[in-house]
Length: 282
Image 1 (cartoon, helix red, strand yellow):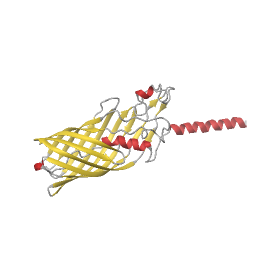
Image 2 (cartoon, one colour):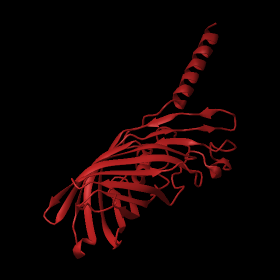
Image 3 (spheres, one colour):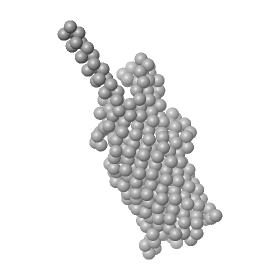
Image 4 (cartoon, helix red, strand yellow):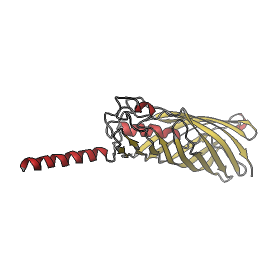
């Protein structure tokens, strides 16, 4: 009887341990998981990507931008808290993220910016991410100060935990399973300030600025192993990051603007950005 109770107790404890291991995970801010999610968030932020400048009448700018996708080293991408011993995750599916962008600028100094990564699957990645920013422009002599608040929300689905290569690796827990379709909600909120300086009669405008981003990334695993067991654990962490950026806007032709920018999160990564846009006067 005693042995039976002991066996039952051991079984219950083992089951509880397995349930805990498969449960949701809340890693600390200095963990590899938190750092990897922060790096993945850098290119998704809707940055200024252009110098603030006064406008004489309501102006609509429509264009397309691209942001390079930084990658973390294998050690950083290897989980230490939520999935220890698994091996590096993957976040380098794309070299850059293209997205259309719409800016509406008012003479009073207010402006609305909208960007969108449409739900088109590319190299195993399917995103539907919306970026919004609302700000104002303040003249400072010949220079212009831009102040913005911004948010980036949506969903990215990709085989982060178990890609095709991992499925054929006997040393991986993904071996002979199904390719994962993991879900990543970036949930980025922030504010920044930008100073634009007009040169060459205003046709060239270098700018620089800084800000702070509040990150609430939410990641959910979606993987079925070779035994048919599905892992749907969630990983959640809240972070705050200081950022800095610098770039230049160039009016290449009437109503046509080119812009380039380096966007830096010192704790995480650097993303290079370019944009081409055309202005319309309604």
